[in-house]
Length: 165
Image (cartoon, rainbow, N blue to C red; front, side):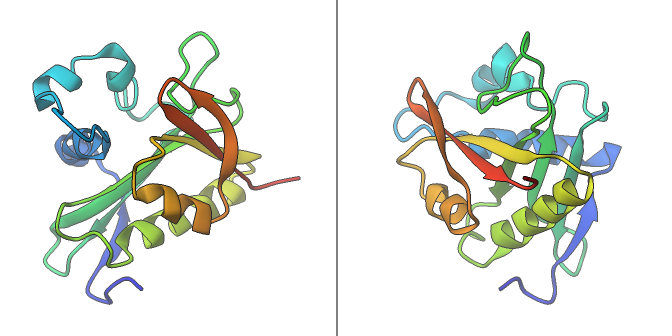
């Protein structure tokens, strides 16, 4: 369960540096992870946040009592011409989530994802998708929340959570 001293707030323009840091943190490369500036220069990775604020973008940040960010979760829509790593279709947002190192296992990611899932369902999206490496410990969290295997892409697994029938 999330600590009562944490609260969830919508992503604001000033939060973008934190989101870029968290994007780097969430990229699961078990060995020899390239430096931040190298990974974040990749156009496919940049597509996760470039031009933030377009229709279909939504994000939340878990903050400590003193306002410091502890984790984030967001989703955005992609097109078939420029798909994300966990692309399913143009009506299904792809989500990303990360918690600061050292704060994992405290329910922050679960709370952020639950918030994002409820928001996406209320917005009428049919499902949410994501891409995860099978060796990433976060896979268990996604499965616990009801995400199911929907495909493979390279070394990553695409997961899907149906929100509407």
